[in-house]
Amino acid sequence: MADLTHFDESGASRMVDTSGKAETLREARASGHVRMAAATLTLIRDRGLAKGDVLEVARLAGIMAAKRTGELIPLCHPLPITSAQIDFHFEGNDVLHIEATVRVLGRTGVEMEALTAVSVAALTVYDMCKSVDRAMTIARIRLEEKSGGKSGHFTRAD
Image 1: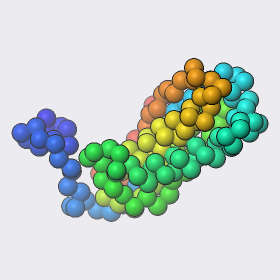
Image 2: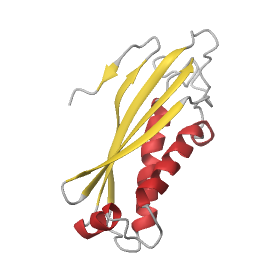
Image 3: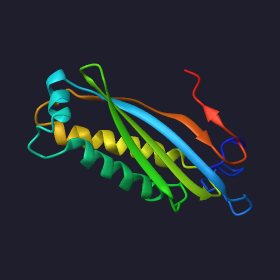
Image 4: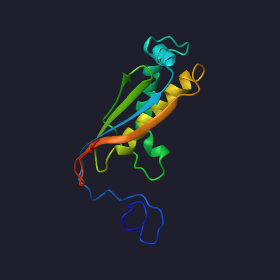
């Protein structure tokens, strides 16, 4: 298990010691989407749901989730996030695309924060729209890009 940083030589779980790392600007961008009925997407776009503006509630939920990732993922470091941005766009007539960009000046990356932000934003969309469309599907939550730190820059090839 030497390649898995969250386990020691004997296989015990551990939080990675980042005290020896330099503080650098680190950024991660993640994305995902929610597939739904065309009528549901229209309701979201037109702000026609009784619960309110779905995208603004999901945006706030995603930002809050990014800030609390260290409380949700057992071995994730709590980080002083310096920026969390959630963006949405519509793909065709049945897909809501969600993208989160998170930054920190720190000793460890913010990939988990970006992924968590997308996940919680998508779950919030589902929660707010489930009364009209229980068949929605949350899919393709993935890291798109990350920068900063020893491992350098990563950009998804596809």
